Length: 82
Image 1 (cartoon, rainbow, N blue to C red):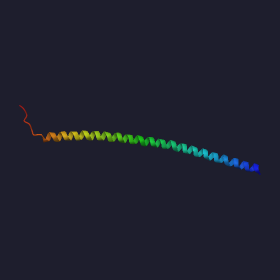
Image 2 (cartoon, one colour):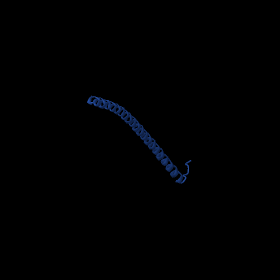
Image 3 (tube, one colour):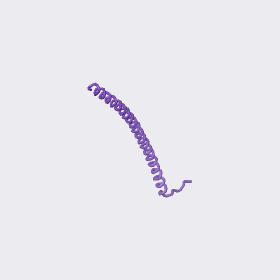
Image 4 (tube, rainbow, N blue to C red):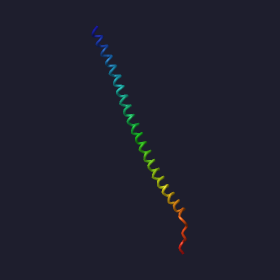
């Protein structure tokens, strides 16, 4: 009887090992997918930050131009030399 029990235990361990191999492969795949998703998210955040910085620079230039225009309109007209 002990021989049959040993065979059953070995078969159970083989099946358990096979299932563990599948789980290990699936976890490894999930780790790779998660890493890719994190890289894509980081790249997207970086691109977003670059676009925001560019928009801020453009707004700053636009504000400066508007201030120059307003100052020019506030100065009294000077006679044009002839």
